[in-house]
Structures are given as structure tokens and as C-alpha cells.
Length: 120
Ligand SMILES: [Zn+2]
Ligand SMILES: [Zn+2]
Image (tube, rainbow, N blue to C red; front, side, top):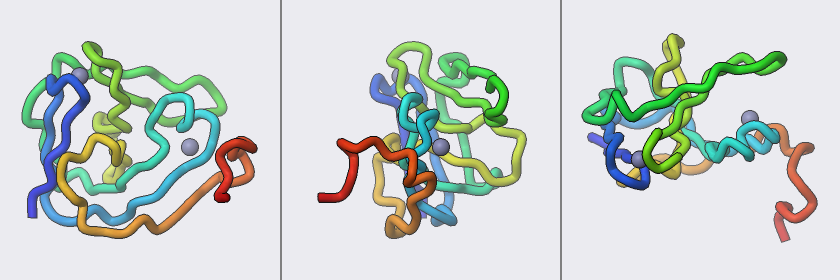
């Protein structure tokens, strides 16, 4: 199975081979503000950047944060961490154009969830 993904303007396009290992939402303020709070975790060998390497801008973390974040320079879409050196890394689930074939399975940092963002 190939899952395609892209940013809002289409400059950045990627493909994921096979099923992501996880799909969930991080409610910490950083993920929320950077716009990539619902993520899929994939392994490096599953990920293929098809187009737009020169459109990907990366911001370096400031302590205490440790992960770089990437976004499309043209449209601002948060991509997750496609340039991570790690063997497994998160990609913004909102960028997926195809069904990843797995259910939403976790919520983390739920204590950081703002009052307006609670299940009704
Ligand atoms: Zn874009
Ligand atoms: Zn987070």
C-alpha cells in the first residue's frame, strides 16, 4: 500500500510505503501552535520525498524542546519531522491524501489541552 501526502500548495509531495506504526494526537502547546498535533509515526525506510525538497524549511528546537519541525516555505503547511535523523519520526496526519489504514490510537499531553478543546 502506498499512502500519498502533500502540503496545501502541492509543492511538497511524499509517499509512505505500508502502514504507519501509529496515529494519534499530541496536545502539548508546541504541537498545537506548530499545527502538527495529529501525527502518524513512520519508519525512515517507509518514507519517500517525491517533490519539493527545496521548499522544506526547518526550524531548530529551543530548549527544552528537542525535535526539529519542518514546514512548506510556500504555504506554511506543517509537515512534521520528515528530516529527522531518527529511525522513526512523525508526519502531520493532516497532510495525508490517502487513508493511512489505521485508527487513531493515542492522545498525549492531554493535561495541556485548552479548556475549549475538550470532548463534549
Ligand atoms: Zn506548500
Ligand atoms: Zn507535542
